[in-house]
Amino acid sequence: MTMNDRQHPIAVIGATGQQGSSVIEALLEQQRAVRALVRDPESAGARALTARGVEVVAADQEDGGSLQRGLIDVSALFFMTTFAGSDGTEGEVRRGLTVADAAARAGVPHVVYSSVGGAERATGIPHFESKYEVERRLSDVVPVKFVRPTFFMENLAPQLADAGSGELVLRLPVAGDVPLQMIAVRDVGAAAARLVIDPGAIDGDAVELGGDELTLTQVAERTAEILGRPTRYEELPLEVLGDDEDLRAMFRWFGTVPAYQADFGLTRRLVPEVRDFASWVTALSGVRASA
Image (cartoon, rainbow, N blue to C red):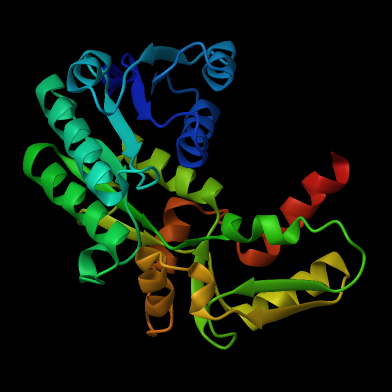
């Protein structure tokens, strides 16, 4: 990134969500100018960003015109898409293509898109395939790098928040002896921030991000050691997912080893202080203890 680039903000779409806010945190730590594109500039999350010196502008992923206006004169863009909502993966693709095309029309110099580990490997998982469709459009219209996170450690946070004093039981529809690669959201943000600043930090166009690899039985063991509380893992049947074929496909895929294929070395080069599961749980429990 040149000195001229420093005079222009880095745009972040999804700025008040977990990934977007982690990217902004990493950019502000490096004293970079940030422009957050949000649906509602008057929301509590947007106001908090303004208070931290972030430029907040109104833009909607469903509205290409508002996106294009918000992306004028930025030095780079980070964004992600989600399949949450009634329109599922169809809506995710539509919104992702809208952002890609708006970035191209606005002349954004380069984009970092947060996809998912395995998106390019024809998994058949609907929300992996939808992200890969967005990847393909981006590759056609703008200079782009992809971060592909593995399983988010934060997915386990609600179960670790059990405030009881007895045995803690962690449950997922995955066999306890299957290794699962994982990453902290904070580190996804740090890696993405590194790439929006310096896209040359990786060769090629993508990095699959991982901070640790453990079986879920080992996850329970690490948790017990750190929290000083008896903890065990209990495998759930796929039936607990009901008729959600998307999630059922993903959890079945987790059992096909290797599923995720993180580049741990490259992840650590991008984020030297990347957290393993033990350090993530330690930080999580420390925050809770001091709250």
